Image (spheres, rainbow, N blue to C red):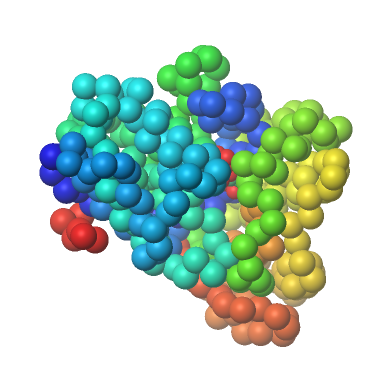
Length: 338
Ligand code: DP6
């Protein structure tokens, strides 16, 4: 039996989005991406590997996962298979018990795969004593879910797509710590807590295969990466916000133009978009970004949070608002969940 190990990893939100894989098995992206790691929204995971377990046991948010499910196969099952292939001496003949909990309600409608696989990668590294570097941890997390490779780091993070076929150069690196820009805020507006219809994984596949705009999207990425990175380093909020907003709209334009179309927005999503545009006209500097779901994340600086939150109340159908700041690196904890 290995030692029991636990880790906590924050979620992240992309400012330049990852959308589309050049290699689905290794989760290698067509494009690089940049994110900000979010404090307050995290996954806490405990793992233990043992020869005494008859099979893997996975409990997420107090619910045991059926390891025959296709969703399990596609996510945690796939990750464990990769882990055993990569580190046969350490993990091959051992089964795992994994207990994982998101500190945000599952019904919050927020993606949990980024924080989930970053926490799982770090907890496995500890339990199996793999002694992985941050770079190797980021690669391991990426094999669970692409966006998870960015959650290994806190602050502002870039995932370079890499060029090698085996993925050895496709991992995340920190651009700046959270201390670099402490007054950066992300206001998460939950417009629907229902589970999204099409997961990112399936959605991006459909986009790559069928959207005529996918190629055009890829052509805009490198410039967005350059500008957002520059904006982060120089703390130029207008530059970061405006490029992030346009990048989000371009990604959604590729989704909307797939066959059949994928439209993640609902009525409240569009109301908030319009509110953000109005607020800007009034001199309140803020921008929106949206992932593969209907929630809107408003980017702003601390000085405008109060005004913006006040105005969001104008929008009907908002279920919840969470105000977050740049968060920390994923970390090991002695608090075990079993
Ligand atoms: C729109 O990382 O969830 O949030 O690699 O298939 O697990 P898989 O996808 P995932 O996709 C995230 C897509 C996004 C943009 C982003 O976070 O960069």
